[in-house]
Image (cartoon, rainbow, N blue to C red; front, side, top):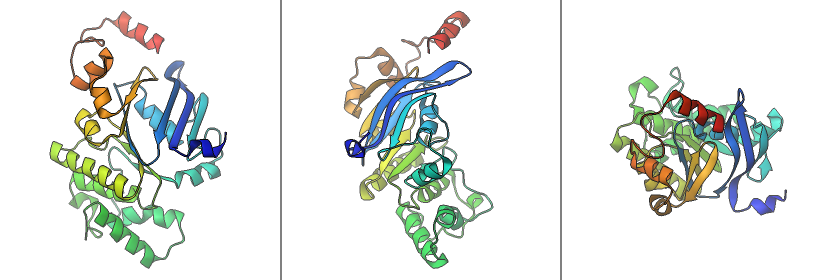
Amino acid sequence: MDKDSFSDYAIVIKNLVKSFSGRIVLDGLNLKIPVGKITVIMGGSGGGKSVLLRNMIGLYQPDQGEIYVDGENIVGVGEKVMNDVRRKFGMLFQGAALFNSLTVGENVALPLRELTDLSDEIIKIIVKVKLELVGLTGFEHFMPYQISGGMKKRVALARAIALDPKIVFYDEPGAGLDPITASMIDQLILDLSRKLRITSVVVSHEMKSAFRIADQIIMLHKGKVLEIGTSDQIKNSKNPYVQQFINGEPEGVIPLKQTSEAYLKGLLET
């Protein structure tokens, strides 16, 4: 397809299918991630969020469908091509995934040392700048065990933007954090997306966070896109599942009490 037709979208997914042991997790999924915006992908457990993320970053190969990242279809490409594509994005993992044997500065410097030929002096300057962007000026020589969970997430974010990516993926960025620290991470996502013109893709189940930061919310259910809209559009959705999800109601389309037969039937229908 013509790359120019994707100029407004950082990621375009067409008819994506992914199954495990005969169970379909992504079922002909279609979506578009606009350039320079914050898109939050939400949905209940087992709805396909994590599997979708792993497909977008090339860790999984789909059974069917196409995934265009910056206009290039990454489905079926070789490892060399995929590594070139991966230079275009950064990743903030759910648990921060810092290397405990490395200092904060060394963690941030890792992609620069692995993927560039920059000198040590230039790398040190870049590390300093990236840490300043996430509010951790002067923390280069700290070890991960010396800083809080929220600070670890910030270090991981500094590492994710070390190579000046076009796209940053966030896997549950507020997981394990207190509400104040989680809101600080949200503010960093907003600030970095605006200042650096980054396309942000956030996988989350935190409604307050989603409504705070999202330009677009994509709601998944049973491996399909159930609804797409702005925060206000999702809040005012007429879909009963969306309303049950965003309000955290124990009873609704998804019942609190469920028989094993109904559960197995639901698995077969996905």
